[in-house]
Length: 449
Image 1 (cartoon, rainbow, N blue to C red):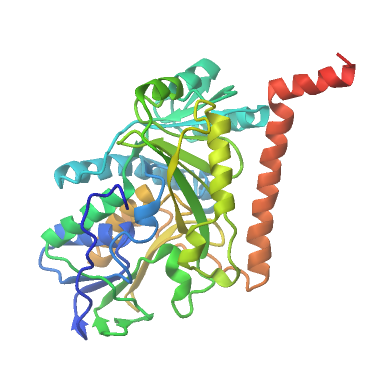
Image 2 (image 1 turned 135 degrees about the vertical axis):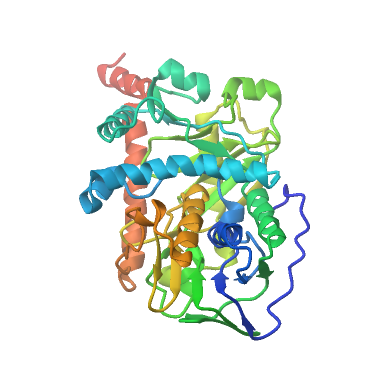
């Protein structure tokens, strides 16, 4: 938030009992996009958004700034559940979503350092290169062409992102780099201009049909939307709905042009590599390198606490990884910002959006960290569902999907953290045995050279 250039004075709390046509719990991307498209479609609707902190306090204001077409459920998994055509429709909707966010950013004058530079995912070992090839082959099976995802050789990948030891990679144009907090704060102002009421510092203690209960009073409406993502476990009865998994980030000081000439990212491509444990980065609008990863532990009982936003060991590991990727970022380059927060993971890793017509309860989430773009699609879909419109969006396969509950503790803690350690170990092993220089050195030692 320190690069936000915004006044963060909280908006007024809910003053007491209130009535509306739609109540939305959560003023992050999902809640605000839902409010936005409802207000655009029907300016007469009385829409109230309730937020425990301030708009954008959660993952919406703290993420890696990838407005991407990534969806947590793979195309083969969607095809197995819903058919090939439905899977392709879902992916195409995600592609369109990136352009739609850009359209709204321009139309509403939201200054969020929007840069439509795509994503390059590097391959830095043999297994990573195999996964890059497999990703492109899978895309072709579902009708996606080079305009959607292309395989890069070592020179092509390095031309976009000159990390150490690049063997190849993939590139998709379907992603924009953004300043996430500026996007969500600008969106909050846009919905207020359209007559939506936002109450901040108003924690919701319970959601039930027709009502969202807060310490200050009850907001009543025929439709109540849960848009709480990583904080969902705090609500009664929702502890096993979504697991809050932490992702942490670091950002360097602004880097000189000479350093960027060595790193690349000239079009502000977002970047990652094909390791198991997700890492992600971008060149920010003010010339920093922002970089994050999913190495933080899951906390027993789905606990969420501000202290978990800061894990010094994870920050140190991210800084080491940056130096491994880009040796030009030596010890003299300062990391000036460190932060983190929880994202939401459903038991089947399937994001969903839906509305129970009988109770009037609606929801969206489980984005597994891919929420910057997906939340926009969720907001548009919820707006159609709430208004009773039968559209291409309401027929997408994630609509009204019900994920199974997570296991009770301690099984949940064991499963999530064991899985994380296994993936971390696999990544270390791959890089150790498949980097050409290290493998050659080992063979030379074995041969006595």
